[in-house]
Image 1 (spheres, chains in turn purple, cyan):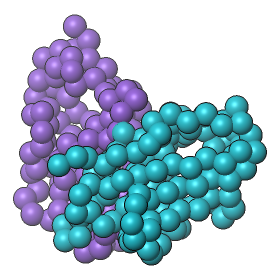
Image 2 (cartoon, rainbow over the protein chains, first blue to last red):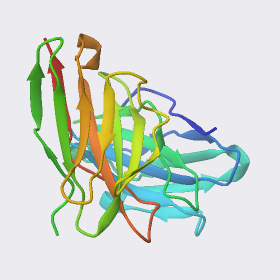
Image 3 (cartoon, each protein chain N blue to C red):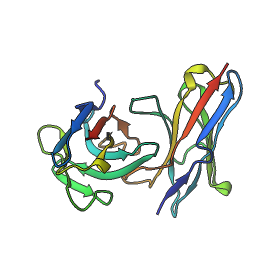
Length: 114
Length: 114
């Protein structure tokens, strides 16, 4: 079985500050990991994904995440927050090698203040 | 290339009625997934289908819910005799035949049961 834990259901940062959203996973096999962003009343948009290539993954909108096997983590970061980054962020895990389901965390709502 | 399309975007039903949610995957995609998002929660997997086949329905409630993905036409998620607890956002995602690790999400159908 696979699972994802996102620490902090709400995170607030100032515009221009570092964004750090935490994600820890549990998986019996080497996982695929994803970060999705959801804006209000919209669907999910893929930010980035880890599929066993480079451990530091760069995504859209200046976001990146690092896969750390020893810590079972896949934290999402952005050096400088922008007001438009305010949204809900979901970490997800799947089993590689098959077109399998995504298992999502409960999400982190990011607030960006002036 | 149009994205994943879902309709209707909003659906209101009274208790006991039927709800039909439609999903048209991206062009060239043959894998379809349905997820449910309850208020203030993450997405939960419901069912994974390929054309004319249900591959994984481990997340589907045992009663009242069914899904299909016919040879022609959209995928349908059907909820019979809806109850208030069915009120949620239902998201469809699709993935291509070969690169199966990434799922592309539609905008969702928000079901409200009165």
